[in-house]
Image (tube, rainbow, N blue to C red; front, side, top):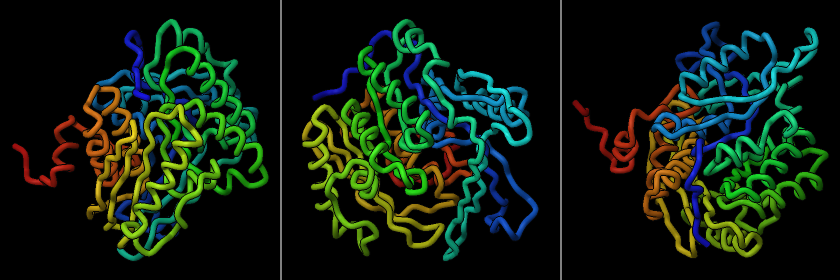
Length: 359
C-alpha cells in the first residue's frame, strides 16, 4: 500500500501536542551543580515538526495555552520563531494550584556521566486537550492537512488526551489526511492504565499510515513480539528487529511505512546511530555509525521529523531513511532538543560524512 498525499492543502504537517519548557544547565553541568540555565519551549511533537518548518513547509501546532501566562507567551514567541502556526484555547489558570505548562528539567550529561531528566507535569494544561476546542472540519477538510503526526506521549498523557488523539485520528482518516504515529512508550504514563491504553494505541495504529517506534515501543504499546530490550549489541539482533516489524505489518496491514531507530550508547557524547524503514515490502537500512552528541534529547524526534519531511517533499523512498537518519544526528548537535536545519544540504552533508567547512 503506497502513501497518497493530499493534493489540496494549507498545511503539510499538523501536530497535536502539549507545549512546555525545558530548563537545561549550561556547559553540560548537572542540575544540582549550577545556577546558570537555558530555557527553551519544548514538546516531542513540535521537535518533529521543526524539520519541516525550518525547511519551509507549512506547519501547525494544536495545543492548549494558559491564559495570561508569561510562559505561554514565551512558547508562542518560540513557535513563531520556528515558523510554526499554532491554535488552541486559552485556559484560565485557576489560581496558584491550577493549570500550567509542563517543566522539563534536564542536564545533557558528559562522557561517562549520563543525562538525567526530570519531568514536572503536575497541573499540565495539555492534560485537558479536547477536540471540542478545535474546529476539525475547518482544519482537516476546508483548509486541508497532508500528514497529522500523533505521539504516544500525548495519547497516554491523560484519559482526556487519549480521547483527543483518538478522535483526531478517526477524523483525519475519514478526510484523506495521512496519519503518522510515534508510539513513544513511557512506563510512568501507562501505570494503572495498561488495558485502556493498549486499546487506544491499537486503534490509532490500525488507522495509521506511518508507524514509528523502537523495540520496546512496539512490544509494550501494541504487544508485537520482538527482541529483548537492552541487548549487548544491536547489530547482532538486527534480524530480530526486522522480524518484529514484519509481525507488526501483519497486525496492522493498513500501515504503509514502519520505522525503527537503533542506538548504542558508548558515552553521553558518542553514540552508534542507525535505523530501519520498511515500506511496500522493501527494507531500507541505515547501518550503525558513530555520531558525536552534544545533547541526545530530541534525536529520535529529529529522525521522525526527517522521515516525514522526506515523504512530504516527494523524495524517492530509498532516500527517506538517509534523510531521517541525518536529521536525527543533526538534532543531537544542538543545545535545543530540536534541530534547526539551515537547508537540506546541511542534512545531506551529515549523511555523506562531510563535515568540511562550507564557505
